[in-house]
Length: 296
Image (cartoon, rainbow, N blue to C red):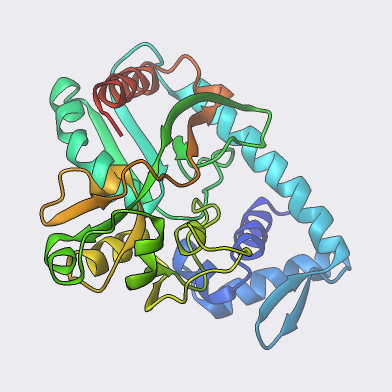
């Protein structure tokens, strides 16, 4: 079996699209299509079902993808173990986390880490979908849930709390809620369709203090935590926000501070193969020190 064809197949299957795979591989769609067709001819099986919304793996395709995924993951580990000078503080680390936490909390602290370790190159990837660490789409993940993968090293990072916030301008006009029933007089912004994955029970603020499991009708919906913050700042209404994104933001106030939403438990995650790599250890120690100094 041709290794290049297998890698192309794996990328297409993961992306479920020739277009996306073309961007990732820097190959034309026609070249990718020819390689997939050649692989199907070599194996004498059909790997994909083509339909209007994209590609779907056949049963044989699913089996090959699972096997290819395991092989690529193992090779990444071998490459890491053979090529990396594990005891030296140099090289590159790639860190992934959700957009809101990455942009508002993590990024401002990276310069200090790079000053401490000038020979370590840092790449940050912010995505509300978890990247595959086993195939080294990233080296380290700060995830908003406990990982299901058993071959990852994981350490609890911090619990994020949620509270209701409003802009000072909005609250001065509409009044500061003094109890739960006062919330019924206010406009609410909440998550819309495609709410980011780390948001659990996103409607809790709409149900707060409402009887019979009913909920308030929101004035506006946004499928982004950062978008919610901007909407609150602009005075649209009240919204439930994680404390890390609202802390020290000018012109917004925590409403009914004793009423909090469900906590999000976060985890610091990386593959077993990076356990003794010095730059990963250095980043882990740094980021846990920083979060220990922070009061969410």
